[in-house]
Amino acid sequence: MLGTMIKKQLMEIFRGYFYDAKKNKARSKGATILLIVLFALLMFGLLGGMFYAMASSLCGPLYAFGLDWLYFALTGLVALFLGIFGGVFNTFTGLYLAKDNDLLLSMPIPVRTIVAARLVTVYLMGLLYSGIVIIPAVIVYWTTVRPGAAQIVGGILIVLLVSAIVLVLTCLLGYGVARLSVKLKNKSYFTTIIALLGVGLYYFFYFKATELIQDFLNNLTVYAEKVEKNLGFMKTFGQVGTGEWVPMAVSVAAVFALCAVTWIILLKSFTKIATASNSGTKAVYKEKTAKMQSLSRALGRKEMNRFTASANYMLNTGLPLLFVLVAAGALFIKGREIMPVLESVFGGVPGLIPVLLIGMLCGLSAMTDPVVPSVSLEGKSLWILQSLPVDPWEILKAKMLLQLKITVPVLLLAAVGAGYAIQADPLEWLFLILIPLLSAVLYAAFGLMLGLKFVNLTWTNEIYPIKQSLSVLVYMLLGMAYGAAVIGLYFLGGIGLGPELYLTIVTAVTALLAFLLLLWLKKKGAARFAEL
View 1 (cartoon, helix red, strand yellow):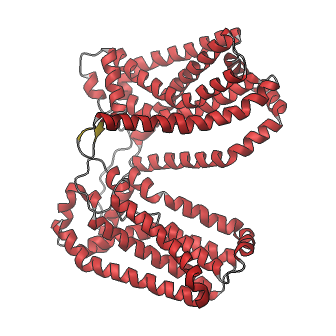
View 2 (view 1 turned 45 degrees about the vertical axis):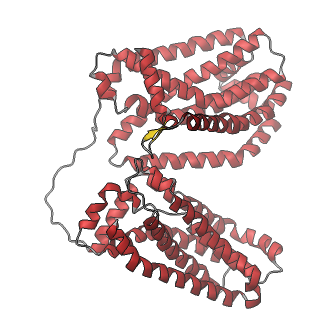
View 3 (view 1 turned 120 degrees about the horizontal axis):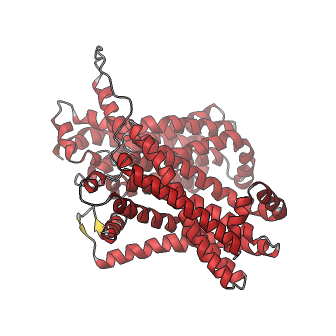
């Protein structure tokens, strides 16, 4: 029974490798093998190779100073963080809030079997994420030191201990996430915030990693003394990898005790946790006068509610706004320091800097695309909109306005930052604000046209129209190409015209293209929407 349950859990986790939800049929053996190979290359080749390089830069200096215990303490800590981050959401969805918990609990299956099967899969996922850090660290250590039996046992043991600690901590944190999740009215906000925090932490450590490692290597003894004095347990844990028998015995006993306590607690509380319902504050009816809304406001609210109801929708189509915000912040904080560098590089090209910034702003505007999949996301419910006594153009306009509402404020902030950085004159201020705003309208109309041309109403998972459709790819490529063309054409012929005349032509062309697309949408696009 336990083996069957574990197989079922693993098939659910890796279902995408064996079943094509888009085509609603099983994948061929060749496609399955190819996907598994690509996954292995990504996880073990790319990520594992990255952590192998990190371990290689640390192992030699630390071993030379007799601080190899600190090497394993640090790499083990990184493995713990990655394992917890990668496994905590799998834990709360696969253990606490699994959709089949009620079904399994209603069957004559012992609770301990259900819990054991869930924990095995949670452990394996934690081992997968933590292993891409700690296993390369062990291999690097073994190739640097001539390992004896104790070092080999210690290396294997530290991999197992790290994954066991990840299991305990993910069970604890997963429970907290699950309890918080059932209390939230809009879980998509919670998921989006966590994802943004993860992206932020990733880029922070990515850009700071080299600096941190170099600082650490320059002050090895100082950091080692601080760790040994204030975090003695980390030294004990690190000595496991170096083959110290007493620390190995102590660490095994401590981790075994933690796992035993976790098992007992889960066994006693699993049924209550798995069947918990939303215990948040219940809505209380209060009589109040309903306010009539205009047609455009009602349709706009409907589009915004659809956008905020899906973490996939918000993250995949709205996440680029974060990069625009970062660009705006950089322009305000460092812009006036960067501009002299650009002037020295492009000083021989008169008027290029404003053109360069405008082209970049246009390219950034094209990265946000909620309008492209908006028609396809109606799916089988499209008939509801079509049956309303509403002009189809009003529905299409609401979809475009959604993109403009979330894009324009951030784009304006970046444009103001660009003007501040170059200390723009009144005419440059006009172009810096007007052209990106017109490009935002152009992209919204262009994206909606693509969404109507390549509509997909039969998707089985919303991620397909949001992220994997041809229309999204075409929109991104042509949108960024337009921003690049604003810059490139200035080199080809705009220099002779002068920046003022050139940017006037760009403004006129952008406005004309936007007008033609809006005209098409109002006539042919609305008719096409009505016929879908």
